[in-house]
Image (cartoon, rainbow, N blue to C red; front, side):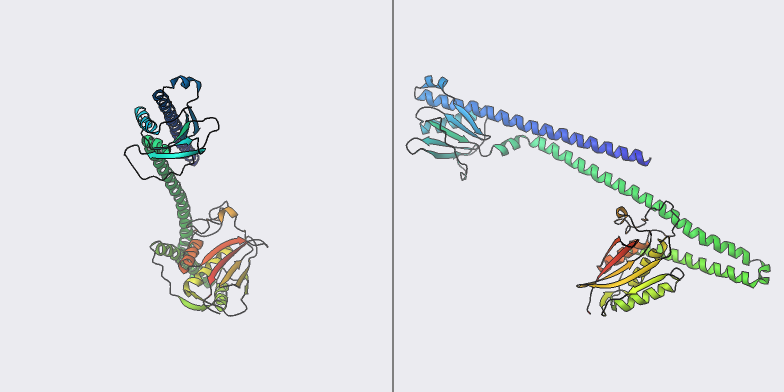
Length: 426
């Protein structure tokens, strides 16, 4: 499947899932509002019946048409105007009966306005399913300036009550959320697998190129020196022998890199920590690199810290880290390489910085360069030899040592790789 087609399918799938989720959310919200509205209407009708029964008991039903019996003060609180003396026993009985007859099975508490003290007097809390239950009233019952004889009913558990009625909808919404999460995870896995597949293809192409080139050179040189006439030209013979040696070393180096990768993949990396003086160790590592074919005729300035500083490190792997960093500084430079290796003390750590004047690394690639097989795009896969394993190897070694590494811009052009290493002692 083409890359763009796959991308469009993923986008379409995400939009469809999000659309379904939004519809489900809107339906759930509307269902909640409908249930709340139904409860409010039922409560209003039930409390009107309570007001009527109180007036009927007192023989004052003629006043019912002249009053506004029920007013909703808040979502869960109602003020009921009776406009006549309220019999508390009848009120208690009627509240229970009328709410039950209108299918309102929810806890409530109520208070009655007392004219003598001009205060709301809390009466009791009524449990829906039991005769008594533990409850501490916390709600403030408001007073009304309009009415003289009235009571206030509060439904403190209305939201959980409506929530229980929507259990099925909540379950369906939860299932939809699980589907959405599963779809997102599956999509992420597919994308990561495609990215890994693309990276592996590039790696295989690089590996094929890096192995075929020395093999072809060795084969060609072998054919030439197999001719007895070459003995007549010793210089030419020695030149082809040198080619075979160089290409053999190159082939061996490439195979070693692949073997190192396999070793790291199996988590067989073990460190042999020693106390090293970082200034002298760095200087020796740079000197060894300058003696190599890649480091010959390269300007490398080593700037040591003022005092001797000791760190815990595996000397073999630390040397490989410095070697890899210097190789990259040379390979990714489109002019005469000039490298500064700086050891600088920073509180309880030292910063080992490799500053180059190379092509630099774009900001969008800096988090990716330490990933396996990744190589900064340069328009040509084979313009710089390598497999994209060097910085991954460095990053794994840094993690094994519990050190840190990051890359930043060099103000003079190029990049600065900084290795942060804790100080053992000075």
